[in-house]
Amino acid sequence: GAVVSQHPSRVICKSGTSVKIECRSLDFQATTMFWYRQFPKQSLMLMATSNEGSKATYEQGVEKDKFLINHASLTLSTLTVTSAHPEDSSFYICSAATSGRQETQYFGPGTRLLVL
Amino acid sequence: DAKTTQPTSMDCAEGRAANLPCNHSTISGNEYVYWYRQIHSQGPQYIIHGLKNNETNEMASLIITEDRKSSTLILPHATLRDTAVYYCIVTSGGSNYKLTFGKGTLLTVNP
Image (cartoon, rainbow over all chains, first blue to last red; front, side, top):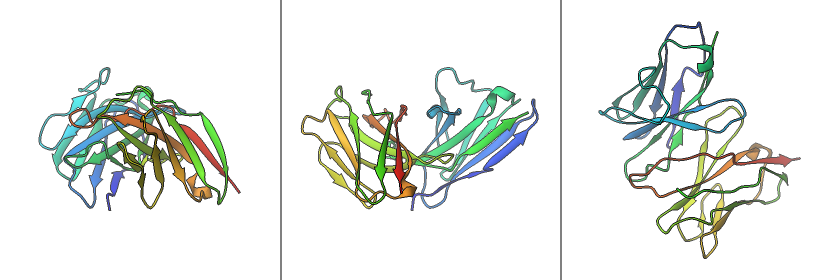
């Protein structure tokens, strides 16, 4: 149980284009989903938290207009990197949690984004 | 959330127990100790968590000292697939559910 998937697993795009990453909880309903970013040889950094049906809460320094998050259902959240630039190249990881114990997060396998 | 301190790296022989320490001397009464691990180029994996009592599941055991200022994650019979970065995270939960990942411990299981 507690499986989270991400799609795509890897994406290469041109600078200036937008990229959408999907995160799905496959066998449970996720009231809260989280988006992290991990640069090479660094630890995970939380970007934003989203609750189903409401606006995402972004961490300090994360541009909400650049990283659009939608959490339209209890099993799906999407992250759209708008007007991507090479510095946005990173490993993007989502996680999902159920209500009551949101620290027990189940992570997706990650999406590696390379912006050329 | 309380800060944690972990060794940068550890080695363990395959089949032996791996004991990963974590110091969290500023932990407060309502804060839980969580352990996650991240195998290279994958998303983190939840392992175990505890508040005061020792905990055990199919993956590992968590030993928390009586004063709660430190804990040890035990992998009873390490395999090569247990090679990963292990993160010890302290969080109070409730409305403050964020997980702050530090540098963790790189555990290398050797054949």
